[in-house]
Amino acid sequence: MEEIVVIGGGQAGAQAIISLRQLGFEGKVTLICGEKQLPYQRPPLSKAFLKGELAEERLYFRPSDFYDKQNVRVLTGVLAKKIDREVQAIELSNGETVSYTKLLLATGAPPRKLPFEHDNLTNVHYLRTLEDSENLSPALSSEGRVIVIGAGYIGLEVAAVACAAGREVTVLELADRVLARVASEPVSHFYQDLHKDAGVDLRLDSAVESFDIDDNQIKSVKLTNGTVLECATVLVGIGATPETKLAEEAGLEIDNGIVVDEHTQTSVPNIWAAGDCSNFPYPRYGRRVRLESVPNAIEQAKVTAANMLGDKKVHNALPWFWSDQYDVKLQTVGLMQGFDDLILRGKPENKSFSVWYFKEGKLLAVDALNDAPSFMVAKKLLSTETNITPEQAKDTEFNLKLLF
Image (cartoon, rainbow, N blue to C red; front, side, top):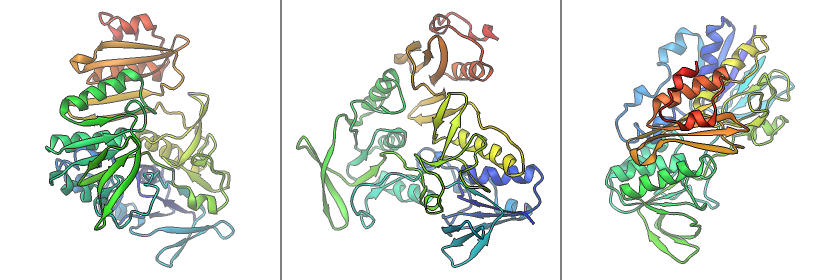
């Protein structure tokens, strides 16, 4: 009998299991989750759940009886320690060995850690797991300054929540603008103004020199320019690193993630990878990429499930992302890297505008801020490869829907 094992209880792992059963797979399915919870959503952990606006039970993709009804064995709080490719088995942290005929690695991308031993520091936080969010939440209603290291999406989302809760917040960013790796200058400048107007102390071009640690807590942060900032809480948001140790030790090809082909299969037969941990060829953009994105994890897992059952689907779904900060929702569709023309549609000062990215006259991506109509139109344009000119995108009087 076929035995499919999925390692990782995030979005990709959960979706793969759902898809396997939807596609009619009747063999054994085992899900190995390092966390003690059933698979759940991660994006609300830095937004609604962190603010106490979303109950824990609403985080879960499926209730526990779903897995029972689908005859899925779920091992929570258990880590996969070793993949034995010769006998196609996985050694687990609880001493058990689980056999497989096909294996999916959906190990995700945990946060990058500070470059020193910090596990015993009680006021240093990262944000990836439900437990992380629960540990951080009380700190947002306490006294003292919150220092956020890193002005990426996670850092800025937490800064927004902390600021709205009345905390004194300082954000430290090594680059000369926020979201430098993932956003254009107009979007970065909009968010810089948004956070400054809310009262956040935003410090760009700022590098940390040292930490003053006492009684298992960081008491202050010293910057390379000599500034010393006292703090009560530190949130570290300096990016994520794909979890590849298990795959690497098993001899799989690794390069900024677990390398897979167009069918999401790894360099080893009967082993696939999907989600934030996978580095895949992207026909839509003509290059290899690794995406940390819920929609990507969902679509890639659907393709993987089908291919594990004998199909030859190619993962080429249109990428999209989102972020909620204060009263602004950012919705992004496409990948803007490599653009040579940028069009601003609308006015940032009105907190409702979009940025359209072109390369050689062809639309690459759109950032829509409090502008859902532009996001939906852009999504349709890109998915259908319908042409739009930079002049049409710039003309706010032009009805974009006329393009269809």
